[in-house]
Length: 100
Image 1 (cartoon, rainbow, N blue to C red):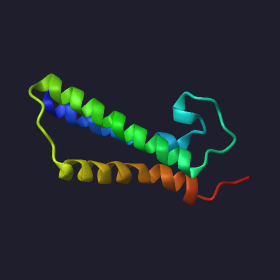
Image 2: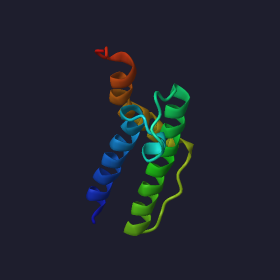
Image 3: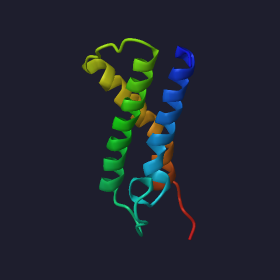
Image 4: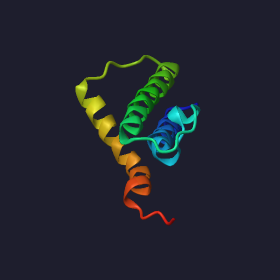
């Protein structure tokens, strides 16, 4: 897998992982089904998904070659991107008018 494919794969994983807490009622996607998850559970799942997405990115970077050390700026930008990617799921869950 080349570098371009790795970047797109990380972006795809981030987009899916950022929206998963908002589109299902299971704890961490595989846990028991809940009547309604609170916002706290969804935020916790979002933080865990953020960490797992970082691990996927680090693994792909290490597979391509030497891993580079990242400063706080990298994590701030990636967190902002991750929250931006989570916005459609948040809108679907909390801002859209559900019928019934």
